[in-house]
Image 1: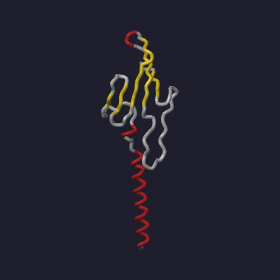
Image 2: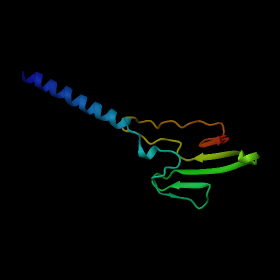
Image 3: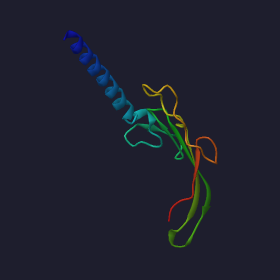
Image 4: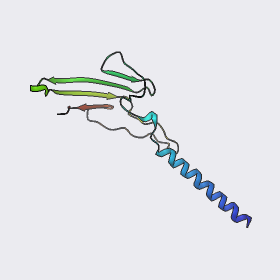
Length: 115
């Protein structure tokens, strides 16, 4: 009878540890946020640069093309760099998660604007 109690206790502990580990991995990491997060302090000496004081993420924006249009329908092409290309390591996952590949370059994206 004591052996069944020990086996039951071990099974419960294994399930508890396993579910706790998966719940921790499922949470979105506060350090993995990309882009400009309004809740964090930021620093930038130019309007085109932003440095997140919490995560150290650097975001640079450059307007490459500006074509004025009628009635405020201007055409702008922006090039944006984001230094947070790799996500932080998570518990239970030893590999670094991959970045988003772009044809512009590592960490760079192009935005053609919206109408």
